[in-house]
Image 1: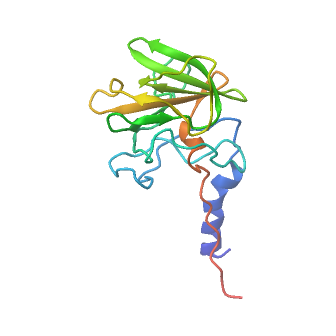
Image 2: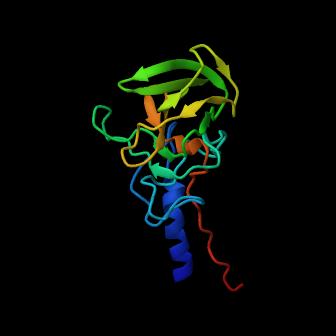
Length: 194
C-alpha cells in the first residue's frame, strides 16, 4: 500500500470508528484549536465531537456579538466530583442575555449568592444562565433570541463572565454543541496518479 494511502486511511480511522452517543462526548484538549473571535490564549478543553451523526448547531449565542469563551466545558468523570459543567462567556457591563432557543422559563431566583434563570427548551434540554438579573417569572414563554435579562458581574473572579450550562435530562452537556459544529474534520486521500 502506498504511504500516502496508508496515512490517509490512518487519519480517517478515528472518525470512522467513533460512536457518537446521545450527548456530547468529551475528551482530551485539542492542541492549538481556537475559534474565530476567540483569543489564542483561551484554548478549548474538549475534542471536536457532536451529539450524534449529522448533528448541526441549531441555537443562537446567548450574547451578541458572539462572545469569547473564557472557560470551556470540563465535566467531571463522576457526577459528584468537581468540574466545569458549562462554559463561561465574556461580556461587557449591561449586556443583554437572550434565549438561545424557544422555551419556557422554569426557574428565576438566587442560587447561593447569584441570580440565575433556567429555560426549559423541551425534549429534556434546559439552559441555565448566571449571574443574570431577569424581570421574567417561572412559566413565561420565551422565543429564540428574546431578551431574558441582563448579565451582571459575580461569576468569574478576575473578569466579567456569564456561565451558561445545558442539561439533557440530568446530564450536563457542552452548550457549544448547540451553537458550533463540533463534528470532527475528515481528511480525504490525495488523488494519486491513474
